[in-house]
Image (cartoon, rainbow, N blue to C red; front, top):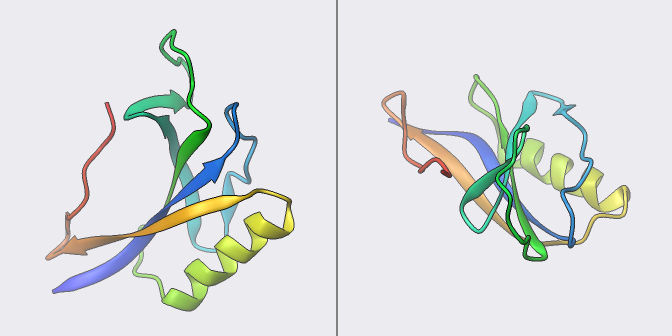
Length: 100
């Protein structure tokens, strides 16, 4: 069975964003840039692009409405998002990859 557990929200900013670490059922797990984890520290020495991938996950299954609320909250805080990718589990296993 496929269940929804989170979202990757791509934020347009030239630096590592200071985002809420928790929101509803979600916890901010990591921020990556060009496939490399840059938060939580330590981050590799690298030049950042202006497109940060911010991963929010929940241990429990979530709804589209909960993801919509998270995205609306980040928008309300002034963050410009460019894309969202839902994160699913299939039979309890992650159906999404991990950054380096």
